[in-house]
Image (cartoon, rainbow, N blue to C red; front, side, top):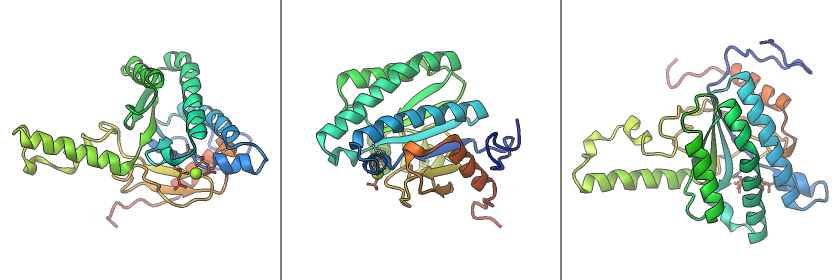
Length: 246
Ligand code: IPE
Ligand code: IPE
Ligand code: MG
């Protein structure tokens, strides 16, 4: 693997990549508005960006990619926008299945899929089940996902098991608790990227990002490119992760 990106001079050591990259795919609406287009046009281009970045992550050997596609709070948006986002997800998944089988990409969904249309829900579940045995890159799509909701559900499940005597409160460790989250079995993200200039977590991977490195950029998600990803990877590689040590 080359030490430099092809078209540019962003220095990335491809032998020291983060194992798990997470992205808050933000700025679609502002990207569209800035061009005099409807917000949904931004979501459509954003879906293409997702395809480009997910492919690139797989090619360079990033083991886990987690993307924030729709939050538990995004239902507040106008119905037309929510429907357009769901429609794009469906289109993306239907197109991604062939590639997924060829490249052995494993898809997982984090979030409660029950409020989705039965058709989209079935597509998500089928995609997840069909790719469950694939050992290539794992792509986690956060859909109707909220970090607080995830933690509450985990706490509720554990409490319910305590009530029937299957578990005792003393048995609850950080490791055990992680196993109740949507992300069970997935290592914590090493790098969380948020484009669009916003510097907040917006209810994303609250538990899992305890020691993640953050990377913010003003670029909106539809304009996010492989070069932007290389900039984030390069910044990540310049950081000193101490995990509370020295
Ligand atoms: C991110 O882009 C996509 C979703 C939240 C579904 P936005 O739609 O939030 O774009 P901005 O932040 O309004 O520009
Ligand atoms: C976070 O972006 C959710 C997704 C990208 C899916 P938002 O646009 O919903 O976040 P806020 O409202 O700016 O915090
Ligand atoms: Mg936004």
